[in-house]
Image 1 (cartoon, rainbow, N blue to C red):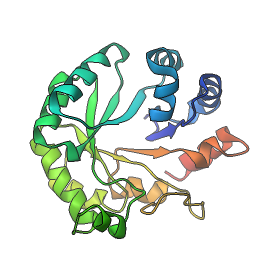
Image 2 (cartoon, rainbow, N blue to C red):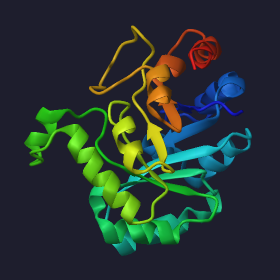
Image 3 (cartoon, rainbow, N blue to C red):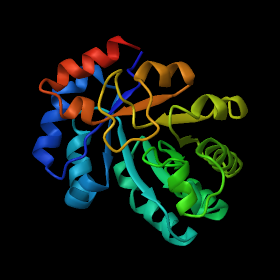
Length: 224
């Protein structure tokens, strides 16, 4: 069985990204590449990372008018990402068009509430409900729009899975027990995320900034 761990490689340096991926490839199930990497390296960088033989999670969090997002998704067809993110807050039409435009090999998942946000942050942007309620509302919208799943914190995944049993749930912001939270406010341990129903977990700095990334990935894998 493939590891549910996707390592988040957040660097603009292609060679560093490639080296990190090579070091941990035996103990992760895929590679998450986001805006920092994509803006620096574009399609070429994704093609180079795909040569390592691991599924690519392209975390671009697309959010724009429906036509623009659909065209952007179409432009990514050639990369054949295993997973692609859009923002659930883009609305039903945007979500439907994103899914319709995606390749058959790509799961389209909607970002609900970033793991760097808490109730206070949501209130500042005009969302009166707490994170769990907002995640559930956006998860229902994503499911109705035909998406494959959502991105949410480990604190909400069990709640959402009750109403979307066959959904694909991505849990980022995962931190080993005792690990530094950094900018994460709704973080859980890898084991807790899997037990709650995560399909995959995304782990970045605890692996990529470790003195021995391979050992760090092994230690996390051993807890699952």
